[in-house]
Image (tube, rainbow, N blue to C red; front, side, top):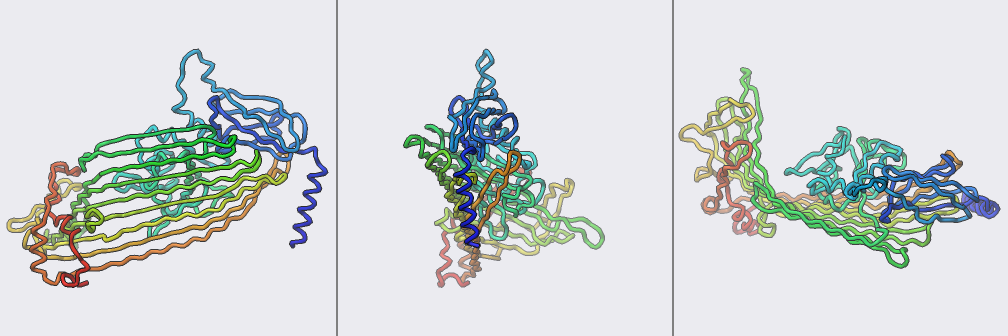
Length: 567
């Protein structure tokens, strides 16, 4: 087999040497401000051959006959360009600059806001499969803090929410796990423990240059996405000096705190445009919260409908996002270059939850009352900390070997989730009687009968005191090699291979603690309570979360002290 390959390579070399009548051509399409135009259609000799420019505005042709050819470029929103070119063994075309059609009007027209989306529409039009492409400037028109919120504005995309932010994306109505999320074409691992869904709220919207949603897959895409594929393209190396900044703020009605958002992008080219650099950073801090009620309905043996589970919940959450990306490329010549792209995302999610539950309600209105505080240790701001991180680093190249084009990529991706010292303290009062107002089935309301209560007091006893540690890590090592060649004026071939080594580890440590002196502990705990009643409870002002063990008391407990607790 090795002898055959050597002989084949030799024959190709001899044929190329004996056939100087064929050559290669490469060029770049720009607008008047020297920005690349991806998705432009380049036609040779009146539809004899055609190509579409890539994200950097480059196009190429192989195996063109030497001599003069007519080249025509078309792009939505720009005037067509035609010129005569001369093709030799390896030739390049000077940058072709296209003029915006709006320049023919005798008035001032502002087009910068939509120029990126104009490029996205051209790329979408010229893709073979069914895709939606959205650019950064289109994303920036809306106050979307993460990429999941930006995705929900694309037709055929649905999202699942967590605390008011889009977390998982669903394509064409399929479950989120049926779709894949990629960064620059490489699959992004998931930090979730039992599912393969990728957390889209990890990635700030201002870190992405283009969103590409493929609703049907091509043979050169991973075949593990029944629903579709969401490809996030990070910011590419620029073709000239580029600087951009964004800042924003807001106010949350529940937390009564201000939100902050900052972003910075900086890039340039050096060494006679051979070396390109693009740096981007983003920071977001959002103190938010939510109120909600949850009810479960049952039917008894006589067919009577009643509420079996009744919950009032109050959440306070602070979400902090940090993201950094780097893009580098080095051009050896017009036909060969190497590039590197890396992105790192970190999200810290501090959450406190106060929950009052009427549990196991009977049809006669008898129930147990449960009052629970969710928090963490003092090192985690006395709140449950969920720290999720994703990173993707890829080294790749684009090369031309005679009539054969070669693309290669080597990559490493990692996703992790840590939940240190997640704590719950739960107090219970058994067998309380309630009357239920079921006038509005969507808002059943429970009132304690005379002599009964659902407010935390000395009659309650400790039900649970728990702490949990969680550590999840998923890693991918990836390598891909693709070849492409034009067989004739009307046909071309593309083939390649890909290797992925994936590992995923999940470790959970769960402990339940019992105070050695229960009486003294209960007295101390009930002396440290917080009233979470508010006139702003959104489902209805008639609901109140009530009184709970204070999060600072829960966070201050030394659960590792064997003189105080056993587990």
